[in-house]
View 1 (cartoon, rainbow, N blue to C red):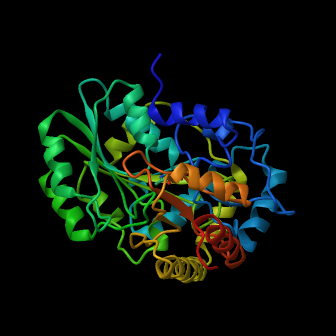
View 2 (cartoon, helix red, strand yellow):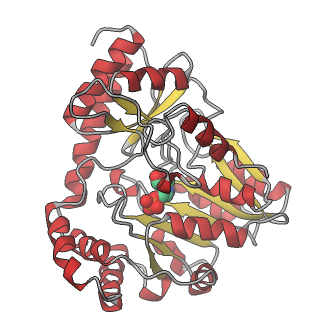
View 3 (spheres, rainbow, N blue to C red):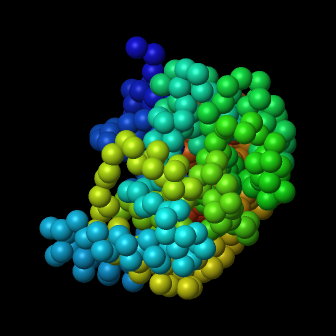
Length: 376
Ligand code: PLP
């Protein structure tokens, strides 16, 4: 059996004791692998984890309290609570209720999209580097995956992606905006051009997992006008709910039906309760966006002053050029108690770093200075 590339890397790293804490790997299987071999940390309070683009603040206080209060009623599926969350999301996003479906996280509709719209006769076009889970699923289903390098400014190269989609039968194009791992953005005019120029039968999966961190407009309302666009959102990032599991797919009802054809999966009640509390808090998004931007910009400026460049990021992660083997650099950082993300094959000397708290990024700077041999 041929394993998808990220899975192979995961297994190699598992042998090296870095599989969970050190790899930053998305994709198949990572969620259920026991962290038996997390690297030993020199920090008394455990390693600083800057590897999975998680939100270090967790769910807001109101969301935590709502989730706790919901536990007693978790013996029920609570479909009425799911409807309330959907209605609150609809009010926020401007999509109509029949164009929206909630899922336990955005990985589920993302995986379903690859399972349904890619295969031996229907390829996938993605950027490189990008969040590679969808490429892994598509490759496992026998689809050809065209990887199109990002432009030097970090934007998706929409011209080259559209050319790749026309070059062979393409079921799906995946666009992550802001992009994981770079946090770089693709401007609305570029995305409009992509939507206008792609092959007519090709669907576009637009992943807005990190959009709330950025100043970019969402394209979610466009699902009312076109039946070939699917927009994904998640509560895992800015809302701090990665472990609670809630996400959403917005699309034409026919596309939602196709996604739903792989079966239903009721939603976790504490996640619904936390999401509702989060959506009712008008301060949460602007406050966390500002906080993340401030810490991210300060960290990138600190790196820049020491000669290490990063692409401009509007997310809770960035990629830094460490000017040497990125995997070895990440291992050396882990030995200092700071676990950063990983490198992508196209950029072996760059590593992804998640933006943590002020204290976590102070630890990052100290470890980075030590490993790179620069002033702290
Ligand atoms: N999309 C992107 C771009 C991501 O980075 C991630 C997780 O890191 C996901 C989707 C999946 O997130 P979740 O299933 O927690 O919503």
